[in-house]
Length: 161
Image (cartoon, rainbow, N blue to C red; front, side, top):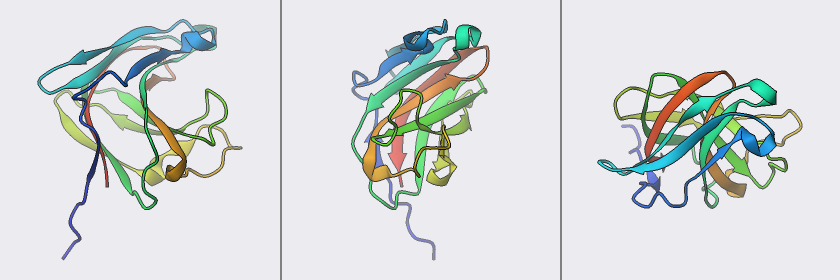
């Protein structure tokens, strides 16, 4: 008999205030966008235009959080979007530069759905970074990244298992 799926709620977005919008403009890029709170269900919606001009190429919504238990195997996101590829990014205290994170891709379906990302899928953005340590976790972000496009992504829930 398989073990039960024991999930821990990280954020149900009932309070979207910890989430903040960040774009490549902090580093001279020209992407634009916004993050806004929504209801039914409670969520945060990231929209905007990603531009790779001027060495840019991202918009994101991010929140600080504390460490996750060692042994966490996956992140479960409840998302909806426009069918495009987006990225979940974990930052730890080992991510010493603003562009350092551990990133995994996912597709945002048109209707609310759970997307499961194995922890093993999160790859360091730079080869000199140490392996991902969830006990050193500091934040999570959802990014529209790496190509010119219009982004539309909503997040309603984050769980880990």
